[in-house]
Length: 263
Ligand code: BMP
Image (cartoon, rainbow, N blue to C red; front, side):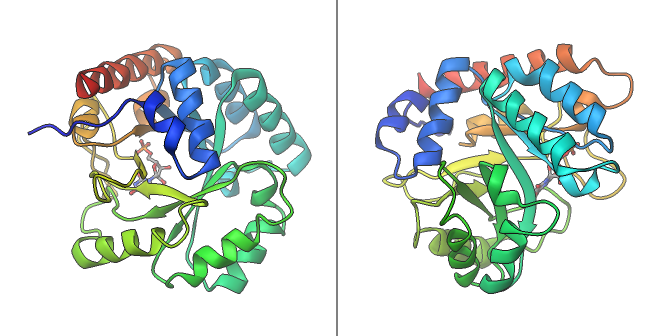
């Protein structure tokens, strides 16, 4: 049977994470639970998509280390500007996976300085709770909301993040719900009296998967199963697709499925 959950608006009043409250407000105001994954290799493409699709999304997800002509000044500065203009959050899909001390420097320094600009980032729970402590320490001098998602399940075929691993990931998240506000997952996680935000990749309306293990589910399937935000990449900007048309289509499908769930 389908999962029933409170509205985004109700949840924003009580959520323990300031970042999640900001996100739920954006979702409510813009009426979109769509996160577009900007998996492109040039800054021009990235910034063009961020500008044209900005009105339809609550979050843009990035892999900044795949941008060939990356510089902080030419990519991050304008991207942050666009996030303010179109009212979206930026999620750097970094998938940290090291000990606390190392992830703290990976998060705050180097070429990317992720903590400076990414409202959201994510991590594998594999190293244990120290990874959250390390990343949280990296937010110490940042004067804006920051939030972390743990990868509790993955969309790819043969993923090892299942069963006991997934359950233990949820336990680790419970230790700091001010910072760890949710999961990358395929199903609703946490008990009914908790409120984790579930963001789900592997969403596609026209394809079943790719040749490298990705698997797609429909928007209805994902949202009726209790996910809060759909993450869509190639479904929106693959060759031959019109990104604006597809963004509107996924946004509408996501909002319709959500409306059906809160009824
Ligand atoms: P696409 O919709 O084009 O398949 O892209 C999915 C995006 O989500 C990719 O950026 C990928 O890194 C990410 N992702 C995923 O596909 N499955 C997961 O379990 C976790 C992810 O971060």
